[in-house]
Image 1: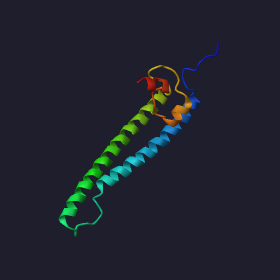
Image 2: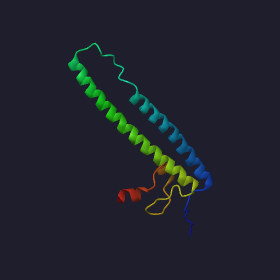
Image 3: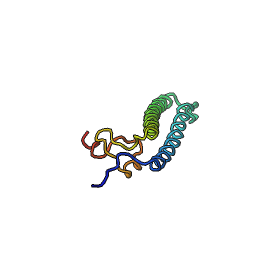
Image 4: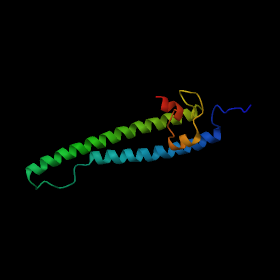
Length: 125
């Protein structure tokens, strides 16, 4: 009977760690870009236009800020999930489904490196 692997080898974990670190780097860059766009004042230079237009624009700027805030919050959550995955690599528990205890296929981990579920377990939810 074939011995089924219960965890990824150290060399496989190193490969996934590289993938996670790259995603983490680009995610942090994106978060910084979002933070920068939030802190910069509206640079449309409409000070000399009519008051009604200004009110409309303030509303649209507020909406845009809310959307950027939501994106930033989502990005922060993603970064936390990536960091948690890095901890699982250190603990050598990375790639093990938290529901079934089975090894998550490499293809799934390459597509969603922070996942903690096999597709089978995800579809049951």
